[in-house]
Length: 309
Image (cartoon, rainbow, N blue to C red; front, top):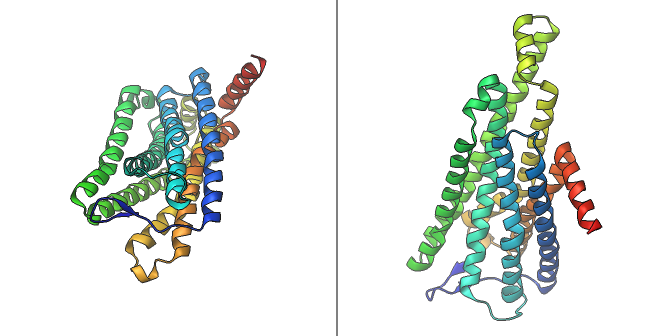
């Protein structure tokens, strides 16, 4: 999407059939993401087994996914209907809001996922000191910084419209890509460090090396339960990479390629990659229920209560 000299949008339309399919898909995903993440937020309020700072990070991710279903996807449906299907009159302010919220929400998600991986690593390395170092107050500050970074970067869109300069818009996209890649690198390092550390400590126990230290470690941290939380967080991270990967790759190809290489097929692929990245918000509630037993039980209880009313 680009702006012309009058500040209005110039967009290459996708075929009508593709637009209809994308519209129907996003309406379904929007409903599922909204209901699914609302259930997860209700369930997390009643779960006491998760450490409060860790729960706050999960809540942040669920809130972000909820906003994708409530705000970003409905705006995207409006964009498809008015621009690609010529249904109604497009309003530039709503189109700008679509891009703004999309970039904010899809920037906060990978940053939060990276924070979850670091949280799990600190739980392993710090032992008893973990609860003193990772506090609710510090996690709130970290989350606030994530939102500030995401909002500040997306605000470049308004600067782009005021200055009528595509360079500012490109800077916004490249910053989003860099933030996502940094988040993936941090998460990958954290999980690799966790698995290598766990293997080393388990080898110590099996070989009876430093038995007193091994006993202390096992008393400080329930390894079996810890592994479950790590695997749960890792699944969330892998799902995010699978959903965001095509969007990042195609966006890089689009903004760095020559105009002669930007085909209709690439633009259609970009539209589908946007849907895939939004699909992550619908997928996360399923992963929470699958991987976190306490959350799954609370979601079941909530559904039963709603059906009985």
